[in-house]
Image (tube, rainbow, N blue to C red; front, side, top):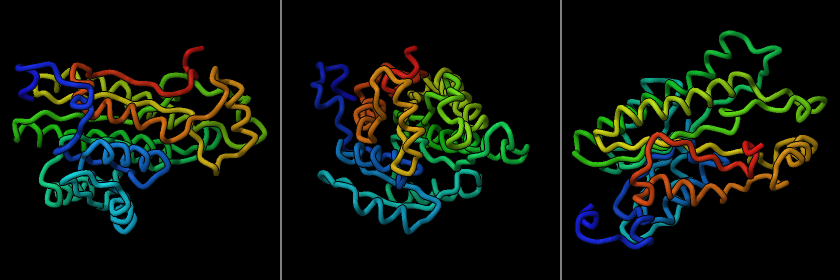
Amino acid sequence: MAWRESREPTTGELFDLSGRVALVTGGTGYLGSAMARALAEAGASVVITSRHADRARAAAKDLPRLGAARHHGVALDQLDPASIEQAFGEALASAGQIDVLVNNGHQADAHDWTNVTAEQFTRQLANATGYFLLARLVHDHAVQRGREASIIMLGSMYGQVASYPDAYEGICPASPVAYHALKGGIIQMTRHLAAYWARDRVRVNCLSPGPFPSDKAPRAMVERLCAKLPMGRMGRPFELKGAIVFLASDASSFMTGQNLTIDGGWTAW
């Protein structure tokens, strides 16, 4: 940006995403939709992905539009490399460029350590493969354009600490072991890619939320989780909006390879 050499930018300019395009996978979900709205509210054009094209297009249509921003929806199955390639091509055809990637999509599996099969465990880890393949496409696209890019991986507090067995006992299955392995791996992948891609002006950071249960979560489990938190309550989706805009924008221009944890203090003790 020219202002980096000529003058100090204002706070508003640092957080402004006008003229940029953000690709948000899983952008129709509980947390993904809030993050997509945040990017749109900061001025970005947003491409939302979902496994279902109709849901992606409907979610994109509902996003706020600032100035010349335009939003799009495309189908993407992040466990299918061919789908990733096709969706990225469609996103470029629709939006013309990709400046920000939010790797948020996740295909879940609720089996815990007692009954998960080898195939189910391996399939869960394939979410990380999808994150990598899409991130590499965005990196290569940025290099070809000679432009900067910001890639944001979605980790979790459960990629950093174990879950409490007594939070789930007698209520529902334990937090899946494959999920913990996946999210821990995503945090480490963030560091690795950041180190290798910094010379290309492609920043890679991780956002680790938790706990942010939806209304579908068992009430008794939520109450037990609240007792484990310094803040004594669960997170609300809008509480990720500031963090995602920070990581996507020039407000974090000297930050790469980091894991930003938004967890109400869960990992503080």
